Length: 215
Length: 422
Image (cartoon, rainbow over the protein chains, first blue to last red):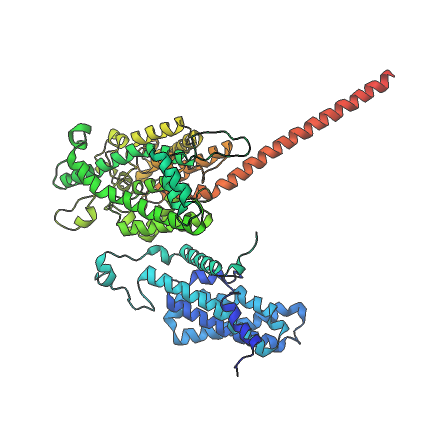
């Protein structure tokens, strides 16, 4: 017996790959470029969006029949702003350094296109359980890409992963640095993040020809 | 049987095989294949893409050879200078020597080899995967790359940059002829942003200056632009003829303005490169230089300002130092990434020169903006072309309208006349 019905599991699994919000729908790019220089920041950002979108979808879905459609955008904004403030305050309380690294980008989750997009496209028309799964799926798809970008940018740009010096010490010249390796400063700049997103899209589409659009 | 027909038979044998593109690339490098077209009328000319590329390479060979000698010369000159001996450059006295050649060849040739081997391997892989012929675009790029990097660039960095430049700069757009940015400059831009300590500063331009830094036998590797950017122009010992002939530190191939000029004339004569771009780029650089000179002369900028050194640098000397001449002749004129229309070429070239000198002066931390200016204008080239074409269309539309009106008017008048006479 499966935990989720086939239809429900598609809600979670589709956005991870074939309908990924970043690589296929090309939403939420700004934050994917801005905060992925470190893996840790990427992970925290991903978790924050999972929280906001998961619960936001449920709340909107529960209220979907009583929201007047003329003011639905404002209602959605209130919901997402409330959730974002919760995330922001929790981070400030328990991970102050990290919240400084992420700075305005936690606040800017409000404007993340993925969130409003899922509210509009899914939560307003489906029940809370389905909306929850859809929210988790889409934010996880977003988070997955963020973590992949963060992994490569931190590994190649700073030679660390989650702050651990996996490639040796660049100042003491140990590990890889002993044989002349150097960190790639370009990886820390946002343009390179865009190129990494492009490469992920490239790899994904060459593995699955069905995703290639006709011109 | 001659070598040529042997190769042709081999080609027939391997036709349709997976490795055929790789073989064909080698086959057609110097030989014209035996096939003829069977349909339609075609003009038969020898200047195909491969000949075009070979011609540019011929124009680059003198620069490369000079670069080899200069690499050795600058190294020994810097060692002398560190010991308090000021060298006077003389072509046959202390420039063309075995010592310089060996030192230069030992450092420059590995750059050339790495650039070609890595770049061509990437091209061959893409050709085999995609099943098309190997495109010749890399022949020139591979030669340009070692000429525009500092002499001591670590080889693995060059290899990484070449892979990046060829794949992201060219292949993702569809290969040779489809790229938006000049691949050689993409490679240099990647190196510059990825490994800035190896691409700028006062050490990287002379062989071994980085290794010896801080030690008792430290040598300087400062370029002329570097001196000026730091306001130490008076400490410079290079004369104008040094700058013109190229006995100065800098990227491998960019120093000799004379040989670049000859290469440029050769390219114009063979009609490979556009003289419009070259002339307008020189004009753009001179105009910007004059504006800065004027500003410095009128006292708009204090002598203590960090911009003063480069602003007061005589405008025409900007063409002699740094990579401006090299960029204008060999990079800006790239037929793929430059403007295609004649009017567009004037605008495109002018802004390359103009922006190059502007970046030079306004960014003292990095007094070389030629590659950034060319990349920027590469991006704008299609836009320039678009508006030039639109303007032409509009002009002709107006002419058509006017002639229609005139014809209509004349017709009306004729009618009137007719009415009167009848």
